[in-house]
Image 1: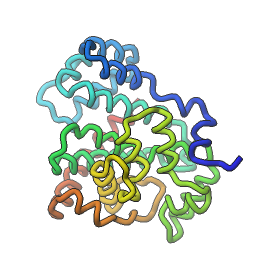
Image 2: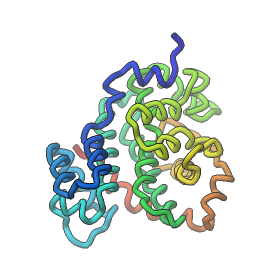
Image 3: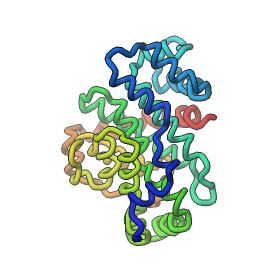
Length: 282
């Protein structure tokens, strides 16, 4: 059978299973009778996760004036959906912690992903979007398909990384040529298997080609622009020595003044190291 992005994901039951705490919280969000204590009880069943979430909420990224000491208080301040997005983000970062440094520097990978997440959130705020936590999650997970490939196809992934680093093609072009599909297709297959929101699936799949977005054109455009911005600095490294090409129509869709770019990148540079240390700390 010819290997495809979907078969790559489906052949590993562990990868197909979404983070359990995220799934339980998502079920509660859909239940109008659920209360803050219900959400807090689910999160507190995982003390390590609860501790990490409180560190993130108390980090300079949020900049709250007073200390938040309980999950219930955190939910009251930032809301159930935003906290659930943080649960998904931290759970995924922990789930893919075993990838060897000989293949790729995972701290650098996550630094790039976090920079993209923070930039996407800033761009969304500048565009007047509400519920910008979804853009943070989309930015963080836009390269999640790469992690599946690193775990399941390490030698082919290594060849693609080497080609992108020393050749004249982007990482997704190298993956297409060497493997037959790229990380955005694998990411889409994983997001579908995990039953993540449609807008998140669309963003993961089309962040390199935003014109192909089906249901979340603005979200895809925001993450696309954020990815190009942080790759150009660069903040971290996702296995690619080249800045992905910018789709000018995606930038136009945002409707922003170009002067906002250095302002956002300066703000990211001030917060990134602190948030990266907090998110990666076990």
